[in-house]
Length: 466
Image (cartoon, rainbow, N blue to C red; front, top):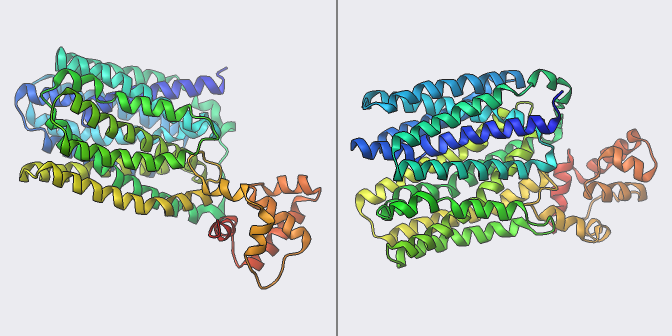
């Protein structure tokens, strides 16, 4: 008999190895770029096609994958397709490379989105931030090892290692006993939260798409400027990213991670300003890269963990997970296109910094409404501060300050305070020693008096005064 933790470890290992393959080879990977350099091909068109296909795979996977059994089968099939489609890169066959990248991009997107089922099934809600951190940390460590070998030893050895990762990942996914998971599937029926889940996902998609434009600019503008630092670039590139995620993963729960998002914004701005002011030597690269990649680590763990929490608001986790990760892909794609335009026009670094600052400013404008919307939906997420601030205030004073036409009864006030503290109907009944049906009656009366139709709308009413 497998325990939950065993299944969780199997799924994490499989996903880590799949991600390491995609990071080191397909998704702006150094193995792929080293192969293009080896044969003197221009990589941009090929990479662009692969990213677009990856985006399509992430979005469309949920249309087919509707059960955990199907998710496992899809991961195995698509990872196998990726393995087969990678073999032409061993040979100098440029025409097959383009087709191969499109196939790999799409299949890889389907495999990634399918893993959303296992993240929901095998990781308890309160542990999902740590699981997301783990997969990001370990996949990037493996990517660094493969990158160093591909750049400094041989791109073909790097390619073989990335394919080995993919094969081992398939093995871990194969051993996940999904047939025994029927009793573990607890679909959360929250009709009153469905609209807020959609709004939250749309806002999150916009925010992630915009903030990751800077990642595309980094790929096309910053990294090429330091390309002569081959050895340093091969290993140090993702180190700040990994350390930032390790720090964020292990912060005490009382630390407000939402505040650190603004620190991340400042670090992105400082990175591009530094790029404008410093030279192109080793220490200059360390400064610019540390600021940029550490900020990327902060934001990646933020939106990965938010997406992981939002899986409970959908009957099909592959849809939510695929859409969430597709936001990152489309952001990098736009950043790549902008970066290519910047380099082709040979704009000075000062103008590149201005473009990056505009992107950050737009993301800053989106962050408060995103934080508010997510707070309504996911009340206790560690990155979100508003709801926690509401709970720490004198609730009777806040309730009294919010005027309504028909005053609440004493019991309704008690129920309202417990709602604002995040208690469920059952929990409220246990605290007040009344039945759950009586609680529901009080809740309906409260909704009527505040002219709302859900807890989310009710909480939003009080958040406006926080």
